[in-house]
Image (tube, rainbow, N blue to C red; front, side, top):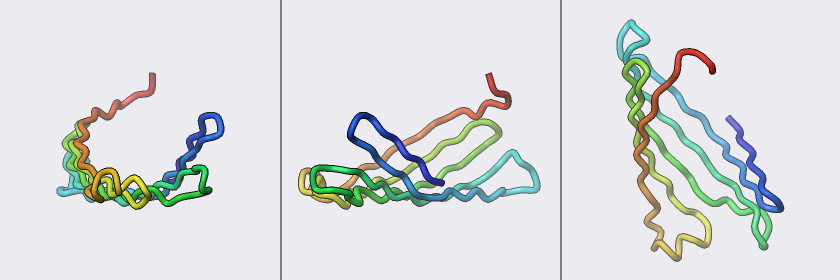
Length: 97
């Protein structure tokens, strides 16, 4: 997927993909794995800002995920290059509102 976000003169581009594997012969259980990259603009021009690796487990309409956001830009000096873990819990609606 490609996601472009702009606010005033600032923007970011997310590039990546997410794959889901059904664990049984049903749509009820699935395991997912994804990889994304983020590009942002700054006073120095375009910068490759981060790489994100994510995994998730889906049961029916509920998804529990864990991702790791590894900084690749100058901000990694501020966080000692450690990056950040993120936990995601979401509900997938069957119908649009």
